[in-house]
Image 1 (tube, helix red, strand yellow):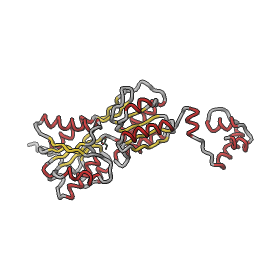
Image 2 (image 1 turned 45 degrees about the vertical axis):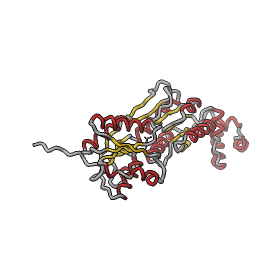
Image 3 (image 1 turned 30 degrees about the vertical axis):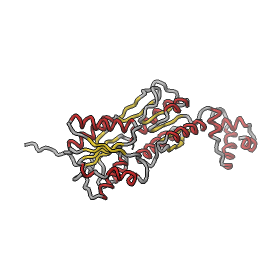
Image 4 (image 1 turned 90 degrees about the vertical axis):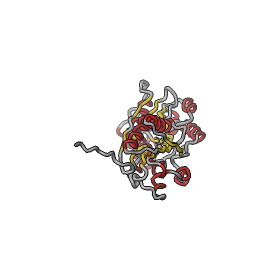
Length: 328
Ligand code: XLF
């Protein structure tokens, strides 16, 4: 700024007012400054600005791993939304490792971010210590931090109802990481409804939902899937591996086994057969998270602490369409 001021023959304060858009600058000075700014390719030091004005334009986005298609779509939607409001996103992949998550929270603190989005958070205390607005997807951090969540229990019930109505009686639920509240609620919704109908459900668990070698990592737990006629998988990317495994083993979907996932992430439509799923609408989740964090950063205090979004069944080819009874 000093160099620009010198070259334009104005004071540093005038250049600062021009760049920060916070005060009067005469048309003549504006023109001179603008020309030099363009020529010198000047960009403001955002970090210094954030520290001095306590008004950072950077937001942290902590996700397990964007190679899960649901999370990469969520990141995209959030980034698009906040950038329209002048913010940039600092992306942090934790691989569901609490130590990495804690390190990222410290890094974000160092960068003086204005707020944090966090997905499947585990380090509750670290968020509470860092005094900026936080919006959490799925895991509840504390009573004062807003959580956006799908009604996962109801989604689990919907998955059961659909398989049951499609004639399945021998059921398997492939569940995921136990620290995820969402995954546990899907499990409970599914098995509670099954028990009401007097049906037992076998359970196996995947240890992750984002590794490239997920099929290889999980194939031994899938050994026995041809003995079931209906499988509810805790998310779509894990369901994709089940569909691939079934194809390799010559098991026909949906004729031998019907499969339903959870998410409605975009891979579901690319699979063959395409995946029936319980939608947790990523557009609605992303917009709700972004809108809420922006309101919090603008000082809004009276917001709901839990924002619950409804799940929805989407029937595709991996389950048999419900038989419509002939009316005599
Ligand atoms: O954390 C849960 C499990 O995986 C999340 O909502 C997801 O369904 C995303 O794929």
